[in-house]
Length: 491
Image (cartoon, rainbow, N blue to C red; front, top):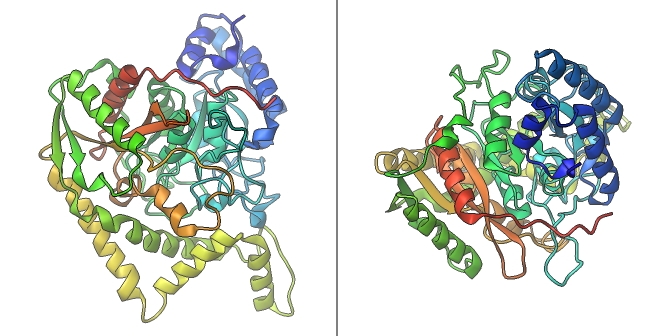
């Protein structure tokens, strides 16, 4: 039998329906792969017994024709999604041992469509990070390595466990969340596909909050088609989330049948930055040529407030985080460290429970919201955010989608940038604008760096126009023919 873990999600779906193999066989193959890859530190919890039970139920439904769209497909779940009775920590010591008595809406949607849960995936603590080095449970390792080197590389963040697991064939798809680039950036540096849908497409209910006006769930997969299939199941209106959009979910997979002939693709001049590595610039130019060859019209556009996006993001996101993380005080759930009085207990629990990066961002957020600084920082950042959104609204009259690089560099070594917060924050420079404006954006693997590491191109689309993003992403995927895989060194 073919190595089942190497099949795409679409191939697994078709194989299960054709009775080429069973969900139990598929699940067992992936459980073995997960066991062999523990040194990647991608999984925090493996749910083998639960997975086999769900797979057996899927086989029964496949047998009697009552199967869902994702029936029998093994998936990994980022540890930010609450899963009923299964530990959910958000990568933090303060939530270690917490087992929610409820299921997030997104994961419930996946289980309702027949997906099989393989376990919970490692991540930056409370999704705060671009490298998966802030997790209390240790860094995740990227399955890719530089040519001629055995140095461990970061898988990007915060959805690093999800990206590493998908790239290493431990699961065909995994959930992620994207607050400033936390799906697209890890997808780019691990050579897979990641999409952040329009803000409000996926419910945030049951997802541990970082920055509520920015957080959005999405899938990480190995192909554009797989992303379309998985996102279809994740989306939908949810009355439990006040920001969930009451709109129909299109057939994203069907959108892949369309080309992009006559489509207008924007190239923002502000994304051409000083010191951009030659490989990134070259890949971007190659992407432009691929689009032209597919019949698209390329148009240079201007997004003048782009340079303010990162500073504004690092005011808005920490401000919302300081508010959201105030609930972790050692009283009702999570870690408790006693003190001389209740204030001492709060202080001790948070000091022991939160890592350095989380503490840094909470302090920044509390500062910018404090009396005397709110107008100078937070209110001003919100005004800048409006200007960034207006930049996009102006160009949508001229173009249908926008093409940019996803990251300013390939994966770097574990520990290489962890002492330089500002340098780490710059990893999100090409991705934060889509979050600040609530737009859908996808990273597609498109080439290799000089030392053999994956690089991605990003498509940004209009609000609620994921179909165009998928179409354009499919064209890049077809043109790039990115079939390189990491050399297996982890078992």
